[in-house]
Image (tube, chains in turn red, yellow):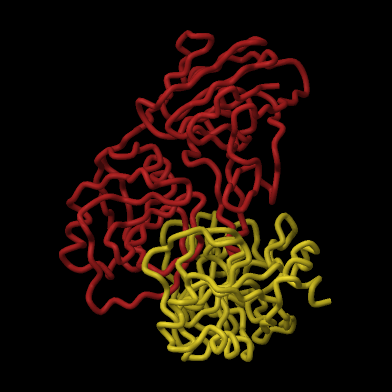
Length: 283
Length: 230
């Protein structure tokens, strides 16, 4: 059993997400940095898409009621085990009564914790991912939440240390033209590629609002309802783009000016609020 | 790229691992209905299907989009819905903040507006946006009311709202940009069952005005729309 004595800022259980339900408006969900989730599972010897805890901006405090094998990846949340620094991207052995504590991230946004064994949590529509809006999967973690970890045999003590070249708080994000890129006014299409953007603190797992100089539509542009996928950059009339993320809506009414492709989106999801970055539009 | 589905020609454009299908001519078939048939016949490489009245989006997990298009062109697509259903949806109309906006915009009293609204039959055009949201058409021109520029307060689950030409149903509590006029105690979202929704594009819906007492009784019964119409 493990217990959250502090939940962190926004912590939820995520895996690879649930597929096949977008038609009904149910998004894929899943890890915001799927690459980091897979590496966390690799560290502890779990199947690559096993559920992990995803922390946002701040790590939580977890008390272990049993011996365990754990691994942390993703954002640098200054993890401490019993008051001593605990590295990321390496397998760690913890003992009954140990306390793992995360602080504020000093690099990146989303941190992952994998625990060897089967995390006992809700499984809905073929996924453990939490989608808070429709109450699918476990609710976001609250203080006092406890989870059982099931094992088939004794702990497998294989210690790994993984090389990682994570580009957190990236200054450049690649994207491709979206279906309605031409909706941008001529001046704005130049602006989009030149100016710096920041992710607003009003962002969550559904979408990231971008702070920037206002972008404008072409005068004769007509809106229509279109399909949205994670990574799609929509431009509402306010002029500030919104990036649709893992828990995002499946259709929308604004022009889709660009798309951040899957692996690049994991990188985007690790940019802290307020950090400046630019888009590179590949054609 | 092009693909032909049931004699309908679609222009195909690829964006990463997503294919967007746009009909070359005015579609003779309702796209969300066609998309549902793709979804129900999806193989392991088709991982998600989304649809609006303008386009179909197919997300795939395969090296080549051609493979997906070849597969799509073999699918038996029906032109007419054999399974189209008709439902009655009970709604409690109440004095919402948005009702005064509607009165100003249409020049009708709320009683008149509702009287007109319940006399028409609505067609479910599409799903999507968020889980359990319904886009219905059939609203008389004089009942159209523009959406609000900024979604504001959270509205209750089951809210019925007017957004432009559409009548909408919000199954979950959310900040809404449409004009709320009432709420239904009946569910169309059926989580965690499969499929997660018990209505399909093409189904027709008739609105029945109910009293607060009737609302409370139905709320306790917690039926979905199929159970209610049985």
